[in-house]
Image (cartoon, rainbow, N blue to C red; front, side, top):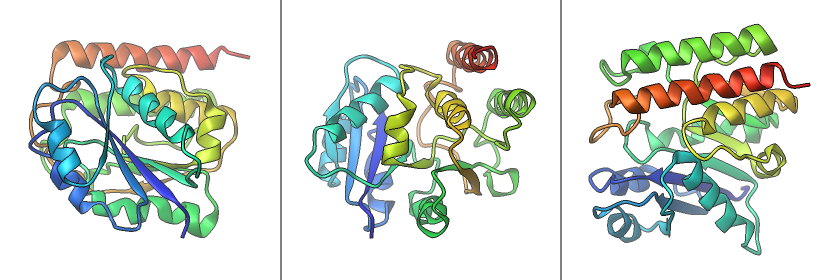
Length: 230
């Protein structure tokens, strides 16, 4: 089996993080939880559940993901696949096997877990999330002929391909940046339908007007930036 590592950005997810870690298939080599300035028991609960816990004091989803990547870059033995997963238990961690299957079986570079409507629990995605996903993926289809339907955070990518993307976004644009750069670099990609449920706790992005606006602006900025970039 290839070496697989999971990076979980987490901000105040004390009630869900242990369950997320518990449901991750045992074939994963290491689960890395990056506490994004958490003020509750997220770090303790993650450590008790068997994860490697890192601390990132600068708030931002991208900051946390980059912290996890930096940690991995300093290890002697590098992974073959990196999986990104949220810490709120809205995704089904056991579906990680579905996410990595196209990489293992078809040598696909990049896989997105698509939160399709028929597999979503009612209320699990806010109207602004649904609209934002539609708008972003529609623009990517228009400008890049992309086949994406979602910006889902549950995703897997070959480690060497991830490094080649030279990820830089520190906050809300992390997921769309990865997809845009994958298109630009002509990575092979596919979406896999995944189940999605109501998260434990309150969303720090879609659950607030400020978070939704900032996320929307950041996503659109990345799309237009790459649309006119030669």
